Length: 450
Image 1: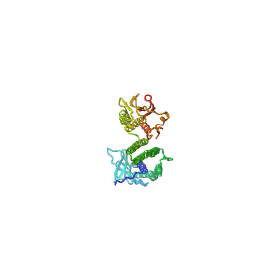
Image 2 (image 1 turned 120 degrees about the vertical axis):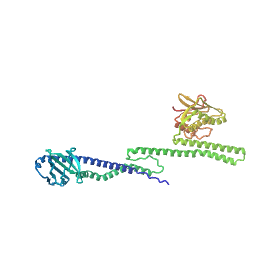
Image 3 (image 1 turned 90 degrees about the horizontal axis):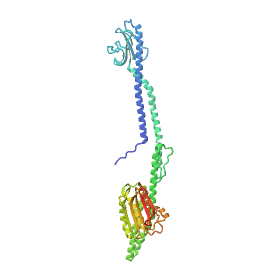
Image 4 (image 1 turned 135 degrees about the vertical axis):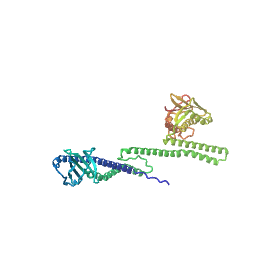
């Protein structure tokens, strides 16, 4: 069994990222402060060593020039043991601090006469400044332990970084509070959606939601609207199917009852044929309802290049036996292939409805013409008949669901024209319904877009 990994918390991710960034910046600041303070402190203390050496150079000419033995200076400060100096006159130690060795702290040779140098004295690191005195035979050394510099540096950094370290938990708490408040609208949206009823499709409204959530809320409301449209389409389909199927099913049942109770073979056969005709009508009605339901669901059909001439020729061939049965003349005309973008199945339904209507509602021996041609850069399919035609008020109502022309002897569902209009709209085709000047009946033109 595959274990489903729980989703990661957005609040936890934000806290982790922000706190990691804060700690990283704090550490980088501490390191930079360490190096900068160390450099500044080294320069400051080196300058103090140089100044001390300068004072000794000034004094040595008067104080130690005639001494035969080195004199130890007194210890006057608690840091004094970490600072030492020496004064040599004519190669002999003339003056030193109590903690300075008797040997020179720095070996002066041809490569080093004066300046700073870090040396090891009795296992400890010392920073020493060497310089010549006022006379050539006088050499002055001033040094201090490097551990003193580290102690001063730690003292300086302690006073600087300790408040920052104490502030880190407070900063983390502030960041947590800010992130918690920032994702509060998302939690509120989750609670709002969790508390809605299953069929509640009204738009979601969040007062005080940030602008970043507006696209998500808008998309969610759009989804609710589309779901509502689909549900309404299904309810309408169910109601229409129940309403329209009631009549053919009742007719089929009546014909079946007649067939069961009829002893005469001719009348029984007539009743059974009526039952088959009722089944055909019910089948056609179901197909029309399903096609209309798919179109009303706003499903985008798959588009491809369709040769309208070849498609119309095929549909006319399928409807031709019905026209021959009514002794009608059904003519198809197409000089060249005429391709338009569309869904072949839906376009076949559109053409079949138009041609079938012309055959069904035209009288026997009527003439029907179905040309496909190019006109001024447009592809035009025409279905023209010599039937009774339609008055203007009736033409205006073509496409209304279940509308049928009053007094029509032909059976139908009243959905054909509604399907034709929906397919035409999905393919951006223009429908033109006019009277036929040539045949005297009705003329329907289907004009493609450029």
